[in-house]
Length: 241
Image (cartoon, rainbow, N blue to C red; front, side, top):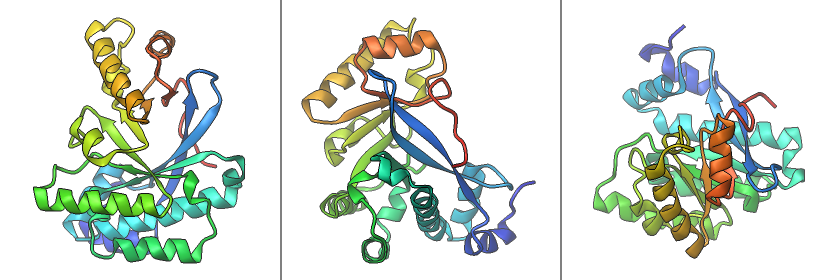
């Protein structure tokens, strides 16, 4: 069943969505270091839902409500007590929205959460901003860091997440798109690119995460290349808590 435009307002207001959680693991020791919240619904794919929300100007509401619901689900599960990092996807347009600072202050005031364990992961689904919005995005990312949150850039290598975002936003984590994990064991060019990115990240205190790991041979190569963390079906599938 697909969600249609006329239903999106009720979908957002009534929060007809939930979250799966997928582990992010240390490639050195294999233990789980974090977990990413992934929006799911019985109607439509996440991309379709966000597309319809954008058409009806409900994108900010959907994104912030998703953040709150993921936090609530995760907190009630007791995982925060285990020192895991929680990765929460957030759209750049949400971060630059005029109400976003108030939303964050409300989170800080109303919830006793370990914010140093919360990672805001900038989602790659939107187009690159103009210079004025990019400057505002930088300011808001600094604001989030000052509040104690961590920052990740999602899907480095695709979408708006070019390598320049590593320089401009100085994130704590960089997530390499699953493009790099596919056939990594046999692609010398991908190995060379990852080595270069990995060296930059090490020199600038950015922890690298490789997404989409599904094969043992690609996992072994990722370890050989010195990538700190990995995510993918081989390491753990998304599931309900």
